[in-house]
Every structure is written in structure tokens, then in C-alpha cells.
Amino acid sequence: MKPVSHPVRNLVTRLHGLFFRRTNGRFGRSVRGMPVLVLETRGRKSGKPRSVPLLFVEDAGDWVVIASSGGDPHHPAWFLNLEAEPHGTVITAAGRSSVDATVTGGEERERLFGKLAEVYSGFHAYRDRTTRELPIVRLRPQG
Image 1: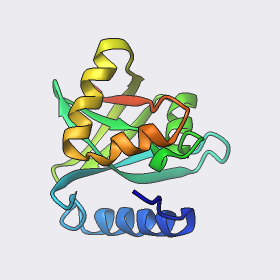
Image 2: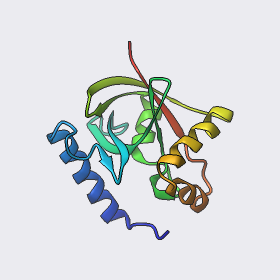
Image 3: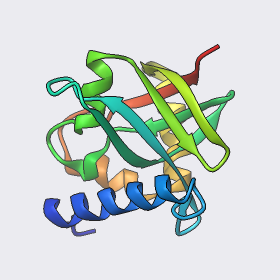
């Protein structure tokens, strides 16, 4: 699988998030049948709100996402933002939820990678393309 260039991927990601938010999730809630949420974080350097659409799976009432960045050698900005401040907002077609983020590890991480790869088999190629461990993040609704 040939990676998509950064400028193209970034543009598509921004447009997807924009349409998702503007239509309250009526557009962009899935990509080829795979579920999508929008994660809002605060920029660790700028302090400005940032948002990104991500594929996800549900697990025990939480949303689970993977910081794959297409197998790039560096973690995506949204993940670095959550490392700096592990709180954000998830937007789905059902509405908005404040969340706390935790990075999974060990057997839980492997189990969740399997669930994510069932939704999108490309995660295997992303994992094989990079030397970094792809963080898997559990987004737990607050309250």
C-alpha cells in the first residue's frame, strides 16, 4: 500500500473534519463503512483548539483510536496534544462528549489493535511501515 503524500492527506483530513462538524455528523460519520469520530484537543504549543477525524472502535463504553499517522516515523500532533493535556472532546453523530485519554499497553493494547485492524486492515501496513510503536488511546467519557 503506497502512502498518501502529507499535503494531500492533511487537506483531506481537514475537509473531512470540517464537513463532519458543519453537518453535525450527518456527513463523514463513516468512511467506506468504517466509523469516524472527530477528536478536539488543545494545541500543546499554540493553546488553540485543534480537531481531527479518526477511525475508532468502541470498547466498554469508551472510544478507542490509534495514533498511526499512516505509519509515519513521528506521532501525530493530536496524540502529542493529548500527551500534554489528556483531555479533549469527542464528536460523533450522537453528539459531543468530554473525554479523558489514556494510552493502553500490554495485552489490552494488543487486543485493541486487533479490534482496530478488524475495522481497517491498513493499520497492519502502517505498523509495518514504521519503527515506532503506534499508540492506542482509550477516550473515556467524563462523568
